[in-house]
Image 1 (tube, rainbow, N blue to C red):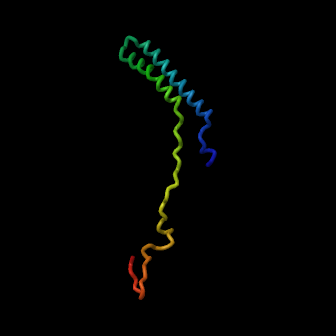
Image 2 (cartoon, one colour):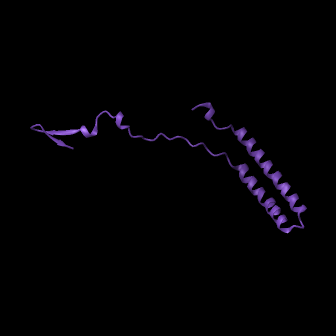
Image 3 (tube, helix red, strand yellow):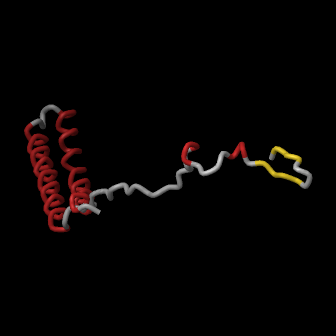
Length: 104
């Protein structure tokens, strides 16, 4: 395995998760302030209030989640190409006493 294919260190992963959490909570704070600002426009206030209510849960779930694992290339059986076989399967025949050839 090449070093460039290695996963980020745990410290880097933790720093990225903290950054994502702080950003999500900042958006939550802004949405709560906007809900208070738009208290006269009820539908807009409700949208910002719901966003401010749901974002903490989303932030915690995202902060506790690790990055997805890389998809590993599994070594699968690949049938040999016809031009790479040792014998031609069509040319394989059985011979019975007397030299009679039977196609098999």
